[in-house]
Length: 591
Image (cartoon, rainbow, N blue to C red; front, side, top):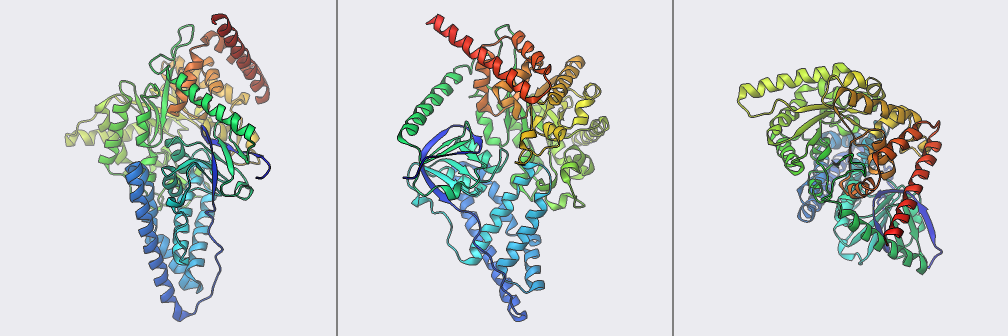
């Protein structure tokens, strides 16, 4: 047994898993450039297409198994992979490389995938870049097929109590492993918004990502602890540490049970201020968590997942309608807030874009793309207004930066409604229309925008990135990704005040809402709607019910008086220490 090692990463799915490591290296074996002659070209091209056929068959089997175990929504992630292996554009590029450069199929696949991946790496935000895992997964499958290697995991061989330690974990790995005997994931790569992370959270499996070098530090069958709460992985834990974590696991289970006792109770402060805690939803099957965790409706459904899971095919109007109806009925009697496609860069099939862009994160995406390609987005807008007849639907526009965009969208929507009226199709005209405040320009004209829309939802993930000029997944500048920076807090206060002055609703659906400390600070700043992963709601509600809104308002004023994020953090920490010690005193008196 080796010495105990503690590794720090990013906790992307909460909980604690204690088990035995199974290491999976998913990186493709070395690929060599082997020259071929002119008369070998046709044979090599035939090898390529035969390899693609075998890889498609293998992926289809994986998809069918996922459908059987997990349902169609998660299994649909593989449809994009199967389609990519049939895509004449992708395979055509590989074939062209074989013919032009007279090289072996493996090298042509490797270089084509590398070229596309390099193009994607410079595009868009972290969420978009993580979509490159789809291309990576497909190229791995194709290379394994061409190299004649066996399928890289055989689930029947996995021992019980397994924690997967991997250099990378693609959606196909995560779904196949997630319902086998796996307890958790420790991954070198990945981030909070990858498909793999979404799957881990959906399956309620603890996961830590961003663990540089973990694959080389642990041996198969070694004892390992994955702490998704703190982003910690412990290799070769001592018996004493194992015992500590077993106790912590029991405490977490007990804490979660206690939090769930608030499900039927209101999110109300001790002085009677009510706050709506809503659910962020990525995949349609997650709506099953809205009611059990006591969410007051759906505060954000990212509708682009409908496209991503079916890419390169666009969902039909009926598919949109069915999904939105499902959301609305699950959220009832509360609202379901559905964001129109936030597509751009990597989220797009090439047929959506007329040109390639140097920097799509600052290019044709979000509401800009919706207005530029009304022929494509009309299907979604029709389905949204049709879905309104089923309940309280609010529609939200992403990446708005000007009043003109809102007015242009209303004109577009009016045109769609006239079309539905002429067809005699039932629809609801008076759907609430709101905007995401995620661009600093929108935040700074919030008082003007508030006169044009029915509600705001603040997307802090992008707002912080754009305001601080920081990619939150870039380790060199990660320390500058500061939710508590005074500029961010001032911006948030202005947006909240502008919405309240105009008499419209304002919510926040970024990562900030899911952290109890940040959530309570936001409530102190005047926020009365917060949207987060449903599993975070009970904890935040429990905290909220033990604190007065007047104390939180004083906390917010104190935080806003500071000059640096570190000073704000200290002020916040001191406040919570006082609250915790006060609760302890009150419990002692009661006992």
